[in-house]
Image 1 (cartoon, rainbow, N blue to C red):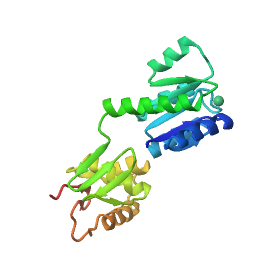
Image 2: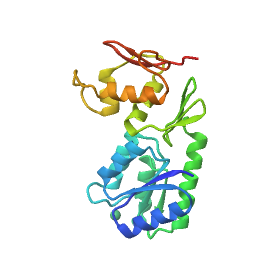
Image 3: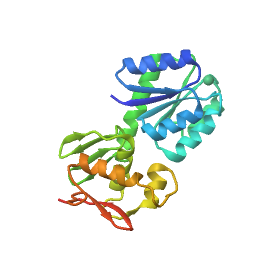
Image 4: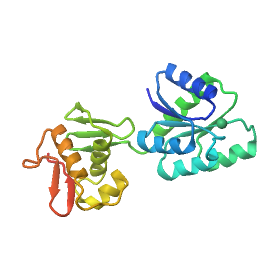
Length: 226
Ligand code: CA
């Protein structure tokens, strides 16, 4: 089972793609505009993207470039333009495969499966491990000592960011910029609140830290306590 994100504005084609991929057992999300699509790719870290070239707010080829600047997710272009030069240009720009409309659900699903398989073989690891914490960045699943831990979106992003830099003190400014995408406001308690939730879910407290250590006036670090 994989997660697939469909970016397509024509609802009939979108429904067909969503149905074909869901029936094959994938988790499927869909958006109808390029901007919502880009945000969805960032937020959901899907295993594959199906991208329509003719979107209302932005050309799909521009969106492909934007996706490539933030993610290595496999992208399958859905195009009505059966134009060799255009397809070659898109493959050069980072598309992994393409399907020509009208779509065949079975063909689309087979191509999705193929790009995901290739990405799994050749791609970088999508798991972070720090001590007994295991973070699957793609499926956004966290385990602690083999047991699943349920985190909300920001708790997950915070933990993943700290785990990627395990052993280093990460500043509050960096966490605001990278996790919340906001400038640091100084007196803001957002990070502290999320840290305390995260601590509770990891079964520790600020007074008796295990993984999560706050360095007063500097930032936070995640360490391997084992
Ligand atoms: Ca379209």
